[in-house]
Amino acid sequence: MPSEMYLSGFSETLDWRPVEFVDIPPVRVCCLCNVITTVTYLLECSHTLCALCYEGVLRGARRCLIDGHHFEEDYVEKLTLRQRQLEMHNVRCINAKDGCDVIGTVEKVKRHFLNDCTFHAVTCEGCKSRVLRRDIVRHYTEEQCQRRCSAEAGCFQDDLPEVERKTYISVGKMRQKLSEIKDQINEHGQVLNGLREYMERVEANVGNIASNLHEQVSAHDQVYGNVINTGKALELSVEDIRRNIAAVKEDICNFSSNFVETKDGTAANAQEGNRRLQCIEDEVGDVARKLTLLEVGQVNLGNIRDELNPLLEHSKKMVEFMNGEEREIKSVAKVISDVSQKVKCLEEGMSNLHRVCLYGSTETVCSIQGFAEFLKEGEGARRFSDVFVFCGYSAQLCAKIEKYDDEMYFCLYLYLCRGPKDSLLKWPFTIPHTLILVHPTDETKNVEESTTDFNTPLQSKNNIFHRPTTDQNTGYGSRKLCKMKDMEVRGFVLKDSFCVGIKVCSKS
Picture 1 (cartoon, rainbow, N blue to C red):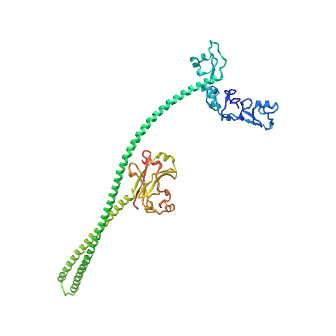
Picture 2: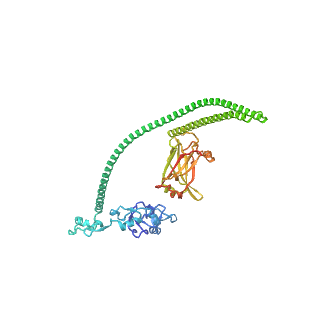
Picture 3: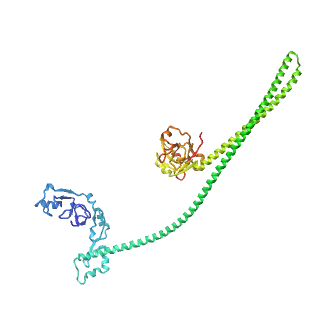
């Protein structure tokens, strides 16, 4: 099939101009006249004809003019080609034979041919040769016209040989390509220079990074040594506290021994008290007998008064004895109370110090960025903190937006995560804790909610505080900490970020 074809019925600009399609199917082109029309007829022998050629064949012997095969009109297939289908195929510019290499759809090539193409050819009036319009001035100024055929010598020719024409076109294209290659080489040279400078900077940066890494390694070694020394110091502090507790316990034992002795002394004092009471009882008996004799007139009132004086004396001594016993008992009770309080304080201090050494912080605050995007996502939006260690347990905090009664609320949940020390910890997790929406500048404005009950049906059903068997358990925490619309008004948002936290709390 020839490469040059003709359009008919598709474009006022390109119709009946020789065009070259790159990928047009053969069934769209008439095999006799090479015209592409809106309707073609496919014969039984697979050759196609345009409507005009087909009508001419029908008036004749009804044989294909290509291979001579006879055909029946009923078996001829009519094919329709629409403008939209034609636009699916690419065509070369009409000036392709003059050097233009633009390829595109019919519509694109039409616009290019009318507005942008620089390969339109004209005929030189001097030598009658075909010259690109853009080169006509150079054709005259460089005396190419006179060299080919001088008008004064009478050597005009109607047309240059096809080989000369193509050679001229090729030279023009090569000159243009060489100019483009030169420009590209210059650009590549600039790129290479920039790349060389960049590599020099990279080499310098790598050297600086290596130096910094060396310094950081040295610093880390020093910090590691400080950490080890600090750990040893903590161990010594714990040991000192334990020794102090042992000393207090020894004091308590000594005090117990003294108390036993005091108890023995108290028993002796009790015997003395009984003796004194017996004396008082005897004196009271004597006074009672004297009163009986007074009634019958056998003794006078003076004798009775003399008998009362010993009774009063014994009573005073008894009162003094009892007061002394009371003061001694109160002193013993106060000493026991003071010692017990000191032991309790020491035990709590050692417990806290040991927990910090072994399990890490009992309070954590996390900053979460991107509040504006978080608010924009609306109901169901979540933001997780990094995994941290809380009293030995690996955990995460999750901020979430939830809707209650047509109002969006800020909610905060604690997620227990699988950690490297899970086998050393006590399960289920039962540490009373407080979840905090942290105010960035005034901690008195923090919003807090504590969890101290770990036996609710929801917790048991979902195994929230049991040892994690996956990356993280189901979250549990505080709902309705703050209305989302109040987060910025109340000052919880600073530089598009907000803070949340958790701390250990005492059971109420």
